[in-house]
Image 1: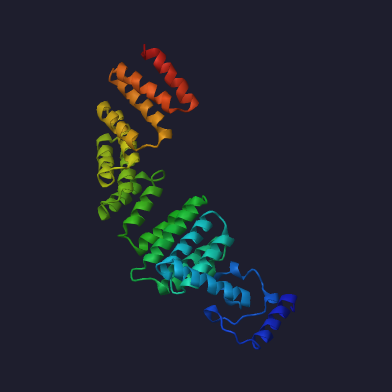
Image 2: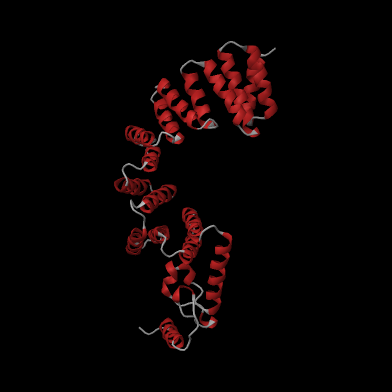
Length: 333
């Protein structure tokens, strides 16, 4: 059916034959009055011609990036990352604009096409998504690291949006591509911690085997062992996380809990005191409160009362403050 849009396209084709000015990406410019305005929300602008004003803006953008960035490819990757951020926020128009900017900077970057693929999938366009994924693989490095990152990012996005079955299926595609990738094993282990602890433990064990410097996987496996009441094993994993990252407050805090549940209150106090050295001011009240409660377990009322006083000085949530004052009344004279 003949429509007004069809007429506009025909007019454009006629006008394009009359124009000879150069353009970014080899496009010929079209008059500003025929600016469609929406092409920036289509992958690679869908090959549509741009106005002189748009082409000038593209050239200025690329020139500015070349001046400010160490390499254009690094800048393109940054714009890809911005695109993923907006996808995760559910803002597809901003996402595609960032992916298009990345494509302007480096049209041979595999991650650009993977970004287009993710955008198309989120828009409910599976055929277009697959087309861009294959384009990404064409430009990917040996071993397809970009494809692995694509699957993990896509899975994270799906999980964030509440589609857990799809997220796990996508993450397992990453595992098929790269079974010995420590990040893939780590991410799968983390995502399965609440659903399938046995599988989660296997993936996390593989993750730390492949990368012993992965403090997060040590922490997560420690949490699994703690939930199984394997306190000594949990403490060992938390200690491994701390040996990798001595400033890992989460590892100290979790080790304190495991030590306390194992009855090792002295070690739990030492870990909590270490948390005090690392914690922001707003959290110190809670750690002093924990120290006080642990010292009560050791019948050290003097030490407990001193810690309770510090907790109140640093501040607590109203319910915790009320409970602490009750403890003070019962134990402190």
